[in-house]
Image 1: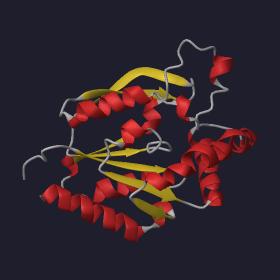
Image 2: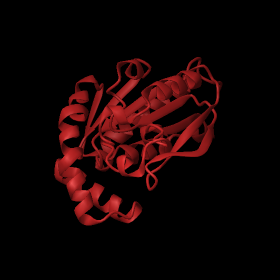
Image 3: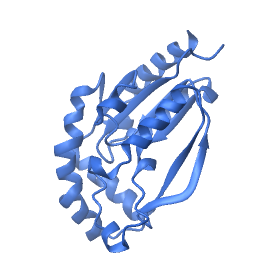
Length: 210
């Protein structure tokens, strides 16, 4: 089967710990033509804070739209849509800034873009063919975030709770949850929702089979 005339972009948004990443990977794993699908995470596109003192970096609100380099994300999505490879940035969460390493990414027929605010920016939204919002209960999301930050990012319990109450929850209510209205598909209960994942996988497979 030949390539699609133009790559298809699927945006998967939702709060921190909602199951966006799980859904993206479940779909990618279930697609027969693994080499025709790729996953991008919005977390790679946090702004470069190299010139900002460490004390200031540690106060950055990572759940606010301003924390992301939206123009770079949009530009690189456009490159992939035009079948051009990109050098995707990587973010160092311990240094609170962009790493000097990039990842070489070749274009694919299906591009899954997942992240808390992938549906926030209108220009980026307009590049998407399918928009998904993962709607998971606040308590479940908080517990998942707590476990992740303590295990993977070496954070302390108090620090995770303070960040959640100080910025994560208010930003979710102000910026992330309202983007639900742009979604074509709303998936309740995230990665646990096998029916929704099957439906999305079937839809994507049919696009690839065209």
